Image 1 (cartoon, rainbow, N blue to C red):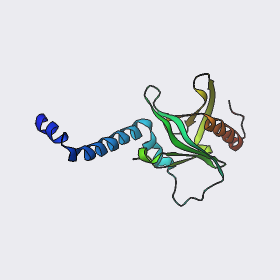
Image 2 (spheres, rainbow, N blue to C red; image 1 turned 120 degrees about the vertical axis):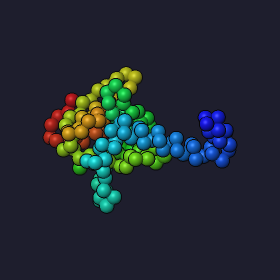
Image 3 (cartoon, rainbow, N blue to C red; image 1 turned 90 degrees about the vertical axis):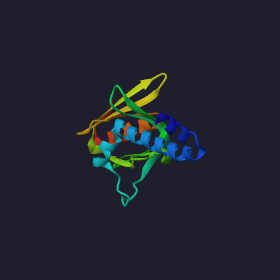
Image 4 (cartoon, one colour; image 1 turned 90 degrees about the horizontal axis):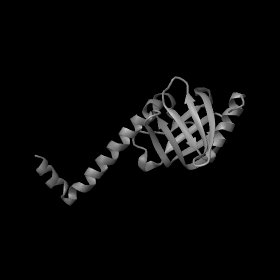
Length: 157
């Protein structure tokens, strides 16, 4: 049985269907492991929402998920920071089961800023009533911390 399967997979017409199925399967697994799928229930962006004035960052690195096994979205997220909240979307080839999110500032319980010689600036976001912790790196981390501070009226850390 396995020999027959291997023989079929070695035929050229099966390469692309197998590759696409593998790509979508890994994308689905990552969306669940990172917590993106659980965030969709609360923060899925409405396609009819009016765009707010925002500061945009392209190809940002973000870690999401459990502390021991976070999913690393390295240089494949788009982050937008506005007065209403934080918008996250994944680069199209990796977007399977991960629609854009719009997280209002009121849903963020805390933002902890950290600086590291090797990793640079990081902002660690902890959300209210949901489990994934989101760590944003780079210039987007600074903008997120500043916008959250303005929106909440509290100085960040």
